[in-house]
Length: 220
Ligand SMILES: Nc1ncnc2c1ncn2[C@@H]1O[C@H](COP(=O)(O)OP(=O)(O)OP(=O)(O)O)[C@@H](O)[C@H]1O
Ligand SMILES: [Mg+2]
Image (tube, rainbow, N blue to C red):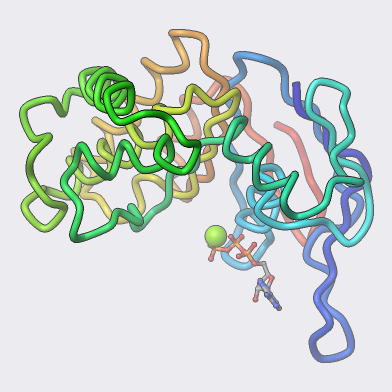
C-alpha cells in the first residue's frame, strides 16, 4: 500500500546532517508495523515523510503504486487529509473545543456538513469508548482519555493509514497498555497502523518491527 524507495533526508545544518540514508520499506494493507530506534535516529522524520507532512531530500514515496513526489503542497495536503490519520505523544487537541468538536475538526476542513460531522464523530468516539465524555473539554480528561480522543480524531476521516508517534509516551504503563490494546483492536478490524515506540515490551508484541540506526533501516 505504501512504498518508500531509497528515501534520504538531509538537513542543511553544520555541514549537512543525513537523518535517513537510503531507506527502503514496503507496508501492506492491514499491516501493523512498529518503528524503534534511539532518540534522534530519524523515527519521527520517517513517519512525517510517510504521512506527507514532510518531503524527502531524495527517493520516492508511493501510495498504492502512485508516486507522490510530483504533487505540489496543496495536492499533498488534500491527499494527506484523505489518506492519513496522525496520533501524537502529546495529543495535540484544541483546548477550547469539546471532545466531539475536536474529533469533528478534520471533517470540518474537508467541508463535510455539520450533521454528518456529528454522526461520524459520534461513531468514532463510540469506537474508542469515549461517548460518555463527548461534551468535556481536553483539560477535563485523563491522559488516556485525551489519547482516545486523538485516536477518534485520527479515525474519523476513515484514513487508509494511521500513524502514531509514541502514542503511549505521556501515559503511565497501565493507561499506555489500554491505548496499545485499542490500537490492536483497530488493527484487528483491518486498519493499517505504523507506530513509533520506545517501549521494548510493546514492540515485542507487534507483528513486525523495523529498527532505525544511523539513518539505516534494519528489519527484525
Ligand atoms: N528541521 C530540522 N532541522 C535540522 N535538524 C533536524 C530537523 N528536524 C529534525 N532534525 C534532526 O534530525 C534527527 C532525527 O530527528 P527525529 O525527530 O526524526 O528523531 P526521533 O528518532 O524521532 O527521536 P526521538 O525518539 O527523540 O523522538 C535529530 O538529530 C534532529 O536533531
Ligand atoms: Mg520522535
